[in-house]
Amino acid sequence: MNPVKTAATAALTIALAVSSVALTAQADGHGVDPAVSARQGQFQIMSLNIGVLGQMARGNTDYDSETAQAAANNLLAMSQIDQRFHWVPGTDSDSIEGTRALPAIWADDSRVLEIWGQFGTAAEGLAGVAGDGLDAMRAGMGPVGAACGACHDDYRQPR
Amino acid sequence: MNPVKTAATAALTIALAVSSVALTAQADGHGVDPAVSARQGQFQIMSLNIGVLGQMARGNTDYDSETAQAAANNLLAMSQIDQRFHWVPGTDSDSIEGTRALPAIWADDSRVLEIWGQFGTAAEGLAGVAGDGLDAMRAGMGPVGAACGACHDDYRQPR
Image 1 (tube, each protein chain N blue to C red):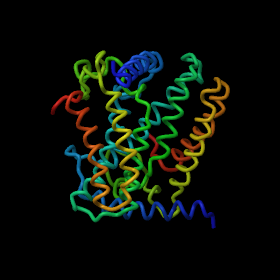
Image 2 (cartoon, chains in turn red, blue):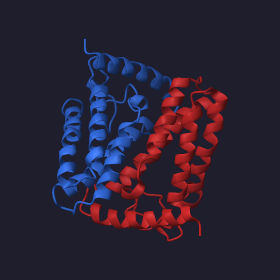
Image 3 (cartoon, one colour):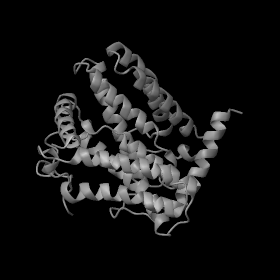
Image 4 (tube, rainbow over the protein chains, first blue to last red):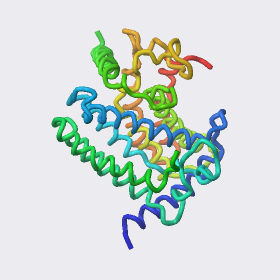
């Protein structure tokens, strides 16, 4: 057994149990589950900061050490968000409108939390080098992109 | 002069200058500025986690040390998000639809970053006590709520 995977699966099981209790009574008044809004917001923050880095990596904006470091630090902060409240059962793409979160996220063999952990490791690496020049930043972005892609490939509905 | 305020104002000025360069070319394909999506997402994540704590504080759900700690840690992580990319000029409530962010946020005498710093201090305090019992958690929530309210009072358009 893969201990990381097992721990991740156990954690998600616990997380979902807690979430379903803690969040059932919540509503945001707009008919959107607040957990869905929050997790989509999470990815929007990640996307914004990856976009800042990506613009520099592609040469569309000048590399700026301080800006790159701030964006990388933001990704690292986001990676520290405990996912337990974001993935309330019944908020998958088969169950509700307005989400691309596939039911596989909630399956027993879900690797979502494992990949989230990989994102955290990658973000930590990126934050360690993002201010050290364009090439260092670019190299640090690779594992972040890989983690993003790994989750999108298997757990996000294609458009 | 208040050095915190001065530093905060200077930081926001720099942040907005950087943002306008770094983010001009971005678009999310849905006509919504990605900075607006990201900052609204930020507040949705904060709201979700405050909601978890609030449900316990009000006795609507049982206090659970581990859940409370996770929510508090999430607020602390969110407080570490550098705000520079979120507040692109021209995304105030006078300029675009779908935001309640008042123009005062961008004014020379804006206290937004100072209040964001207060939120960070409050979140750190909360994370230090949230797992220590219901009363400790409730006490720790006070300064967090005060920081939220301070910003909402002056910088968020009423519904």
